[in-house]
Length: 346
Image 1: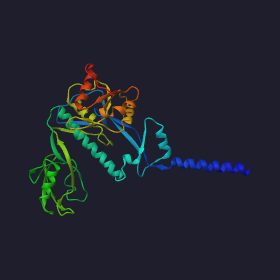
Image 2: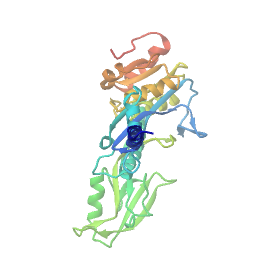
Image 3: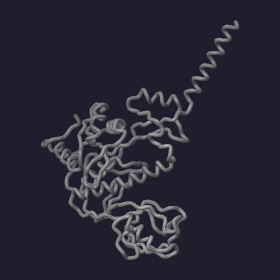
Image 4: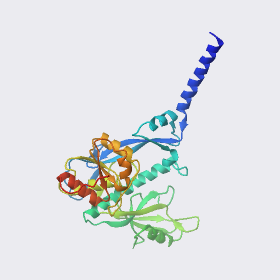
């Protein structure tokens, strides 16, 4: 073998080795793809996605599916360059910078915890919106979001507890709870009256001292709602607030006679406010693909997502523009009955 031929073989081998190695090189990007869909009128692992207790419910048909976006990559689990390149050539996938999903100032665990908290919050807000639509009573309450480990409240107050009074005085918002706690000196007993367990309960916590010397117990709180009956959710490993619209519609359908869908396969997305206003979400392109793969023919689309949705809508999927819960219900009524106006993205 000539020296030139040997040189070409060695050079080719080194080039191939570098190319393979480069393709496997981790890159700071995240691949977003269509995630699973869940029918809010159905079950997940044998449990109802929406379970109403203490109120009459009605039979439903069809599907009202929430849609999700799955991600691959992130700090500590970065994708290879080849995976990113494949994603850039696939119209159903988005490749975004890592910090879009995982801001540098926050850990992966913190991002996941926020997603979980947003999902729980969206379920409460969706329930409030559905009950407000039905003109059923909804009461604002202070809810324990998290309890810091090793603090006086650890093991005594629980996430989900509704704090209705401190030392017998009703509390209307988190600031009122903080003010009631700080009336005490560190080391004093504080009595929290909580609901959300099997019965209203008084919980005594001995406060500790914060860095500024004021009394603290170690809970983080937010505003939530007290409902006249219980609504539970089971959605598996799904996070974020974007399922609010579909949760509200699922609750509304279960609490009203007749099938809201008319037996159709309907999917959708959108954040939900307690007054019924629907907000925009991210990942609309991937969510539409997931909905169509799951068999949906109608997709409820937040008004502010319509432009992006129109540019990427899959064949066979009809986009229905939604501004609020009332409008979504009227659109579904029109689709079911064949009369009335169905707003569309156009």
